[in-house]
Image (tube, rainbow, N blue to C red; front, side, top):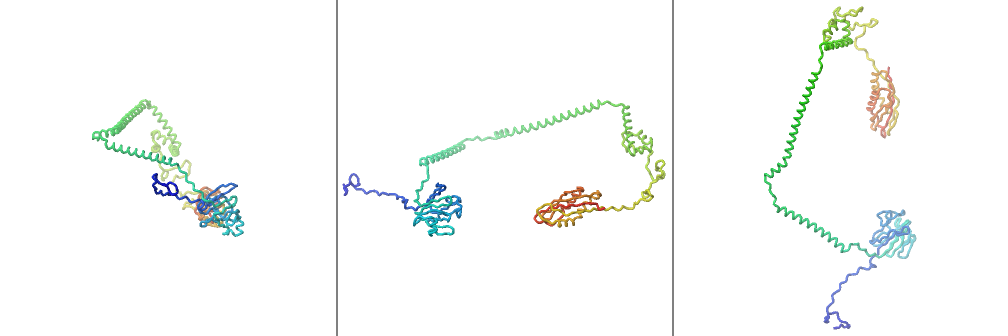
Amino acid sequence: MASSGGKPSSGNRKGVDRPSKPVVRKAAPPAQSTLPKVLRIGVIQGGKIVEERIIRRRETVTVGPSEKAHFVFAAQDLPSSRFELFETKGEEYTLNFTETMSGRISIEGGVGELVDLRKTGKARAKGKIWQVPLTDQSRGKIAIGESTILYQFVAPPPMQPRPQLPAAVRGNLLANAINFSTVCIMFFILLETGMCIWWANTDWPKPNMDEIFEKYKELVQPRIAKIEEQKAEAETGKTENADEKAEEDKKKTKKENWKDDDTPKKSADEIARERAEKRAQLAEALAQTGINKILGALGGDGAIADVMRGGDVGADQDELLAQVSGVGVATGEEGALHGPAGGKGSGEAADISQIKVGDGKDVATEGPGAERKIEGKVRKKDPIASGGSGMLEPGEVAGVVARRMGAIKGCYEQALKRNPSLQGKLSILFTISGSGKVSSAKCTVNELTPEVCSCIESAFLRFRFPPPEGGTVTFEYPFLFQPAG
């Protein structure tokens, strides 16, 4: 069967017409010309493009030295570190520029310089910034310092797909990782299952009491043997020490006996001669002493000689004196004590009140005599400020020292009692703290004794002065010490 147009119908071979299947077509992507244009910006420095970027979204574009700006470059004439060069107002862009910028842009109505746009009123002022609205057909260049900004609105280029690994590679890696993990998991499952089965089916022998005792004995027996060995060693050591001590005592006894046996014995004549020599040496020593010499003179040969004849040389001096004859203790009886030959004394005891001086006057013995009072004179000069960050009048320092002069004078008079001729100069360097207390005191010049210096340093540490202004202050105070007599 033929169609009305003379062509065979789209049927089967038998000429039966069948309805055709509906064809589904995918919607074509919108043409690039129908999409809104995007802003393309390039930066030229030294005649070369150093950066180029497409701003796909409608957003404010900033330039300047700040690292947060879209385009970073050095420019000293910008009002801020992030100058909004292209500002968005809704879906439209506005160009912002200052009087220091130059360039040419194309807008509706032609191409014009930035200076002319300010003069003709096409750019409106907003403070120190001038603004010009832009359209999608606008383009131009703007000079900012040593950098030049080129801009234009272009159709958005197609998005580049992210690079991906081929499907075959991705599938192999994933499959390999899954297979390896699966094999490991299955291996450990089988291993654990086999161990559990073996543990459950194994017939473990149960130990009886004899076996347990034997194992315990094996563990304890070495320890018991070691303890017994230590005890045996200790007992052996004690026995050896006792034997060694007995041997030493035996040797010592033999040595002493050998000394006693081998020492030659002295005869009676030799012993008597040694005693006579010792007795003579002792008599000579006693004769040289004070009381023994007097006793020998009074008694002649009878007193000491009798003692030496009858006494033993081994007796001490008290025993020797007890044996002295012809010597008695003096008493108050007449004739009991006589003076030397030719003397004028009567030998009677005299009272101390009967003692007279050379001119016949009695010696005064009525009570103690008057004690001599020791006094000293202290001269002082004006204090000298020698350091410190604070301020304090020297007159105030001198006033405090004058009121406490008694302590300084007392230190000198104590030393004057020991040395009445003591005199000389003494200078003391002391520091007054911010509270008025003396924090340190030291003698810089000392012609007296160290005791006087130490006493005066301690006295100054107890002084309290008016608080200095502005911190601590150090003064040096000179003194001159002389006896008052």
